[in-house]
Length: 513
Picture 1 (cartoon, rainbow, N blue to C red):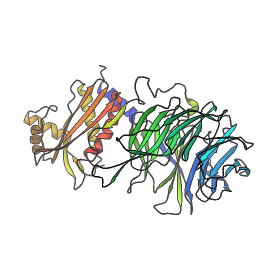
Picture 2 (picture 1 turned 120 degrees about the vertical axis):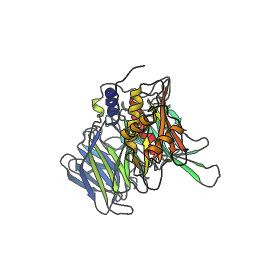
Picture 3 (picture 1 turned 45 degrees about the vertical axis):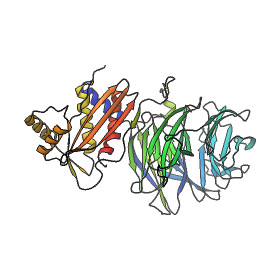
Picture 4 (picture 1 turned 120 degrees about the horizontal axis):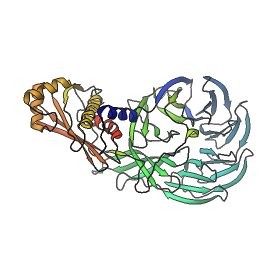
């Protein structure tokens, strides 16, 4: 087994958790309306904002100014896309119309009326030759662009289509619909090539509803936002889960499912380097976006906003992120935050393929999951005095256990319900009792806790079995001399760098953050 010194190990952990930064470049206020759709041009220069009243705003991101305000749709703008030459903006609305706007003059150049039903998604081929649209009609319409001549219709879905995308070569079109079907179409023949049923269940016997879909820029995979639901064992209430499932574009095979989003995933974005999925992951108290690390299933960062989120867009060059949100629940005004990104590679800069799927096993890479309840063991009341004892690490370097313990201790120190006992105090008591830092039993831990005047002691271990790493933590109540509970997180296809991610999953189950 490869050995890591403490310094190298910490550097690897820092690299794994600090891969990008966000800088709030500007806030765009929209009075008396809500953003319903956003798109950033391929060159990262223009931001298009569509609202629920049918107005489109074009902003020059770098110049930080609005350059056009365009009206033409009757009602909500549901989808927009720029052509690849940054000459046109194409918009689709709930009024069933598609409009082509000259990006530089702001004038309406063409209107396509053929669809005639609320539009959910529009997309344009990489060579700008074809435009496709879908929505409440079960058919997908395809036009020649920019002529607007109808090339044909594709039939195969039984429910509304939620998202469309052309392949990199432009000869295929992939559609995802509420009927839980993904279909790849031959654009020239207007016929299906392959159909895949979406069956990404994490609970046996559950129902699944498709809410949204998004595509990696290189079209290697597609992500689908799902609502999973089932009656509890007592039959008195429904259990809901909000998941992201990823599928291989070419084969239709399920790659991985990420669980734990706090609300329905009605929209999301995939960064151009294919490392993160950005979702609205809000609770009643906290409105926020979350960066899910697609490779290991961990939320690496939360970023707060001031109200309910209505739209998310990320640029293909990896430089910009835009998030639209209402200014408080029930507010008639909204704001768009524009963040400048660093550390996210753009699509055009891909030099080497990132291995996302192996032939031997399903999954993007390392997969982290919690195997015990997620409810925090310390969940309410006043601050509790907690002593964290260095975890055992049979078969692993002592430095790995020490660093894991320090990382967990650092996370727990952010909980408003925890007061940590200083490490030197713990070591002093251990020396007095002639105990080692590792190998403490629950009885030993209680004696240590009494000498430290601590209310709780946390003990645990980190184990490695093949490519599986397991971190287990036990919370001991010093007063009652009982183990309050245990929490465990596992990681398959694990590397030493994933331990920081495992700690990030484990810590909130020990104390409420």
